[in-house]
Length: 295
Image (cartoon, rainbow, N blue to C red; front, side, top):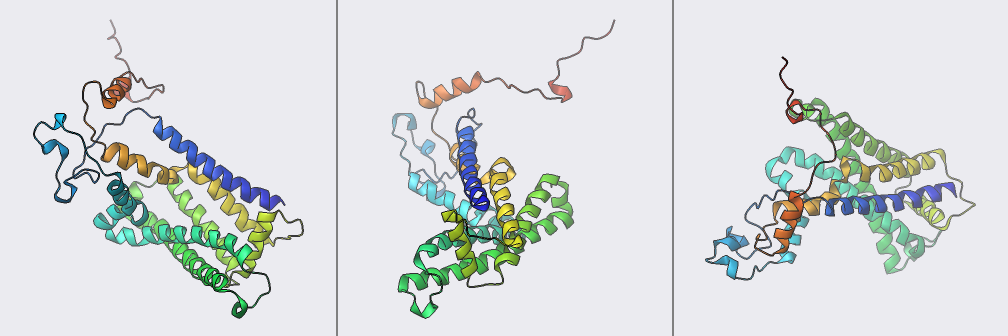
């Protein structure tokens, strides 16, 4: 029962805190736009063109394609495109972690589906086509997800630890983030790796979903569920919440080039942003008021 509460609470907090983070981003003052061309949402994107190349563009409608913008955005979100293009050696281990996480998310969903699709004690040969599909997809995503994510998180930690360039820019929090993920994954391998059909994982998932009072978790199962719960709650309030900021980074910073015309929504935003005053104080000397010279 307690583990069920922890599981549900951690998922709810993950979703809620992520949504709150998105709300905070959406309410932030207008960012200094970069207008990095070519901008995917514009016509002429293929050859690096821009709406502003047209004569008297201010008298013409600004046609955009949000579908193309989202398509380009997904390349970065799903495949980490920029890292692939600019830091290929680092991309391999970083993408191993991210792909592993995507697979484990899929694995978790398949476990939930499997609770209702694969009866306990039924032989694989007796499963329906749907049940067999869920069974084998669960096996593939579980094994590959745990392996890739563990390899990626461990390799990233070591890369940051021993690469002189990365080491200079790595904070203690970033080491902690990777170690937390690695610990949760290793505990997952130790817990579920003894049954690569993941029948036990499916049974435990069913018990957690139904708040089963007869479920007696092992020490490893308890440790893994608690570690994953802590990780889910921690991610949205840490630097790992960059998944929330991806949309705003591309849509509102890199690719936002709507014209600032008189009476437009952009003009209103600019005027509103110009009234913003920081509410925090910095200790940097150049931000301190000048001191009157002594007499």
